[in-house]
Picture 1 (cartoon, chains in turn red, orange):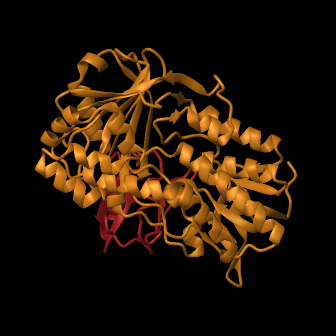
Picture 2: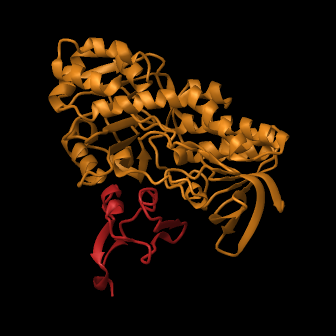
Picture 3: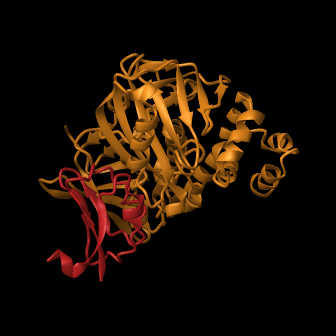
Length: 65
Length: 397
């Protein structure tokens, strides 16, 4: 399964990815940053494309262990 | 800080839409709570901060030097080769200091009787019998519920509130712009009294680079590009800065910001049982230039008028609240749809077409396009240019 992953070092926490997620998997929590709900994420990559600074990658879930 | 257990209105989001809505609700005698998820109202900035002067009169806010950072008297639009058209018609305005502007709007609303919470995230709605009856809030310390008759979703492009109710506000990638901006000092600006707009498919696909001066030597330098471009907005902007050393060779950033701007059509149904959606959350943004501060405040003001009537009738059903859409659409929405069509015209142009446009269009024509007026007359200007003419007939009318 492909999943979106935020690079927290790059992320400016603008929340731009939240509005384009078709399944509502992305949440912005002030102080914590962008949280992606792995159970909801379908790995479509829209958040990665729209991110103004390239802070989101699409990874195979196994790579994230 | 005393909060009620139940408010007439809970506004989610303390941006320009939310605070003006709260202020106007309070003025009309409604009890209102504004819930903001960020720890600081106005930050981070996700905006070029330009606001035309007429909005101050339209909305009823002061031109206050505390937040009106720099006066602008017009703008220049540059073609890819550097030809420019100057726009002066009705183009007076200000570059704001939005962090101060939004706090001042909130202070004004509080003076008017509104209550505020910050760093408080609405993680769910309370829905009973299909009606929104309150919100569930997490402020990091505790989770709690507050009841209300109606929720106003003013939670921006990253809106989740309307979705919680069941209004799909998910933005199509093709209908948003990806934005990035440096606020910079040390710029070499020849005309700091003007805003500067640079268009071109290599410069900013579907969008533009902007320089919005905040003093003689400082400015917001930003970019918006189509949401699905494989390169990032930052890459395009860094490239532009690299190629314009005449402006940027002594410049350094003092702030960086990113954000996503809705440039599609406004959402079809910005209301429901006990809910109204306003501002960026309802995609009430100018699809050509991406400006939304004035439109957001306007939608908040219109919503407050409808809410006051609903309160009088004690009826917050969608039958009553749909008047918001009707009033707003007649006043503003129709025009935004025309502008959205014009956006689709522009996004199909090549760099050569932009060069032609720089010769054909004058400042007034560009102003009219960006404001959705006299669109038919525009097509007449293209009669000699078959490609432009056909695109205009197909997209604009």
